[in-house]
Image 1 (cartoon, rainbow, N blue to C red):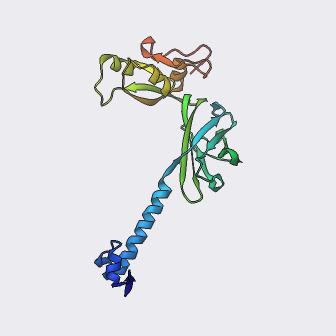
Image 2 (cartoon, one colour; image 1 turned 120 degrees about the vertical axis):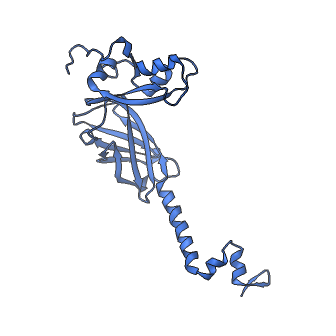
Length: 241
């Protein structure tokens, strides 16, 4: 018998206070199984949650095929210990981290990668998203992205508005079909009209089309091309297919 406030209560009554059913009492294994399942689910949810981190990729222009190294500065939230990061789990577009510099005072780690390790199908362009991901030793995931210019690819990333599954006007439909942009930001700023809420999508096109429309480098290129000016676009002087 158990005592609560000087009154005797049975084990059944005591457990009912905490919402444990009589069925669980008749089969203790069910109770333990339920508790284990809840703990496992809680642990699984914690490991599957992705912690957002701030990413900065350097240099601003990645040259595929050059063999150059590049780095990412990863800034972690205040309540996470950067000493618990599993460096061997860190990847940037398929490239594993080959070196690191830990900066505790800035809550950040600088990871170094080889451009030759980047995934083979990585597209080029002025605004290519690079995602860095990894794990803490307890299995918690972290991830963040930055955009950089990428040259030397076989395909380029463009952005344009989309009227799919939306009620749209003639101006929006014409804009979506004809105008391409070098970045999501450029597509957002240069909408068909004020108040346009069309979605913005990205697409890959052949590299010769990309540099013909938007130029070869981030410094010498443009942010927008209208297909009504001519498609496919002419290649820049001195560039061959």
